[in-house]
Image (cartoon, rainbow, N blue to C red; front, side):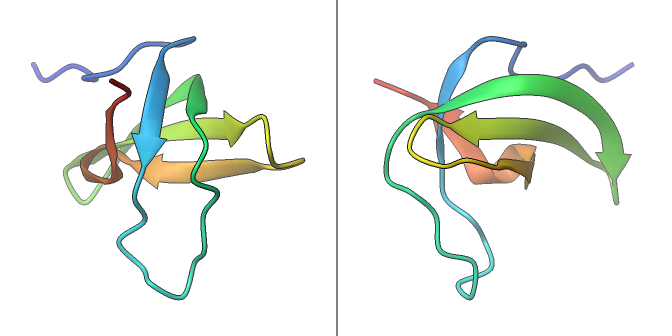
Length: 65
């Protein structure tokens, strides 16, 4: 059984695959683990620089260094 790569509370970088969706360059916090969509896990994330949450696919996230 596959598991989510990231966990709640973890800080990640977000690079949206849709270029029409601008994103803040700051770090994002994983708020919620969501079920897969087309075989890709999803996450609810939020940047401290934005007032709203986003949904991101696992392939759009990476660990902050």
